[in-house]
Image (tube, rainbow, N blue to C red; front, top):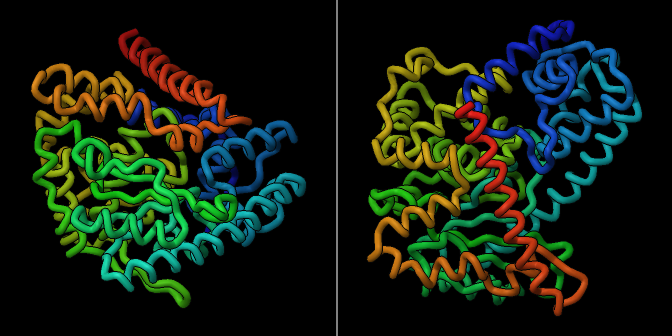
Length: 426
């Protein structure tokens, strides 16, 4: 730990200016409408200092302001990480005791959830291995068990698994034998449009995390002209093996994970970015070997049409988590330039919701539109089981209400995007 440092508004001002410069159209709101940038300068600088493993003196703030900090951290899924970091700090560096108690409760809940996640993941992996199905664990659980000292520091809400397309049906059967229900079987009819099938446990949905079974590794594959050029077999050949005393699995190589995370964070969730995802970026980058992995990263991010979001992701990690890029790779002007197709999709992404982009691209190509009509209808009117799960109501006959809630959320996202576009023009 560094020596004690005083929190000052100049740090927060620099942070806000840098964030606005990097991503003027992106929202750091997590699961609420309140951004960390809405906090007082002193509390914002305090968050940043703790995340960077500094030892900041706790700012002089009212209990109401500390509650706001707590809400922001919770919305960004950062409380378990934050609580772990302040635990080793002197008393004068910690939040007031009532706030620390709230954080402690959230951390303990995360510990319990992590244990459940580990047990569930181990059961699924063993089931796949017995049947000869190779699987890569993605996102939260993979990151929690491979990058963090304690997996409880990185909360998750579901399990994301990637299998080879030729093993999707077999993997689905295995999950169903383990007691899971597939909410909509999309693979046979819409494998080139959708990327996953969703599963919930039939007997114990309250204590079993939902499972997303993927056959495509990136989420914007329908948008890009060259998406079929990405070889999923290559991801399995480069897979990163993770072993803990109680769990062993494979996940994406850190290079591939960085690119995947950048697309997920910057292009899919630009209106609800979480600071926990940005911290993931910093940890992943620290696992890259110099210079080989960084050179591979430069090449693959262009090939995967993720050059622009990757730069934004890394720059955000520099600002928030103090990530230091290695010499020779710290000047993005020297990196390979993005393709024109990526520039077009990026410009559309910054102006519109991803559903709007998908419709726009489909309408611009009549032959493609005819092929995608069934998939577009499934996107607008998903299987009732999916809608009930994502937008639950008190009774099954209220299913239309669930559909309306889904559409209203899209409308809300579209309005947010439109406001951002008008601000940019103004």
